[in-house]
Image (cartoon, rainbow, N blue to C red):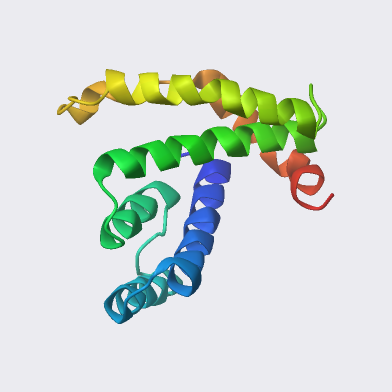
Length: 148
């Protein structure tokens, strides 16, 4: 529903599928399956290629447990947020960012614990209106984030 977030997720999903096929898949079957997914994403009526479901599927294909996949996804998301803050020179430089990333690790474990036994997916989502507002500024910040 948010065009900027949708476009970003699809772009990240396609990039992750490419990385997974070329650098992570260690068996011919995994390479073939990921290659087929990439082909279907490339077609107009095919898969959309959103990052989160592709990440989960590919991690499962590579033999990671659900817990390992969730932890890795949350770690990567927190790392990306800290990295964006550094690139935008919002409040810290790279040295401070390392410390911040390290301090976030216990929160990742807390988040995983709080949702570990959650079976009802309708209880695992949340609304974040400020995030939607910030997404709207993504296009104007794109050059500073990705081309500096």
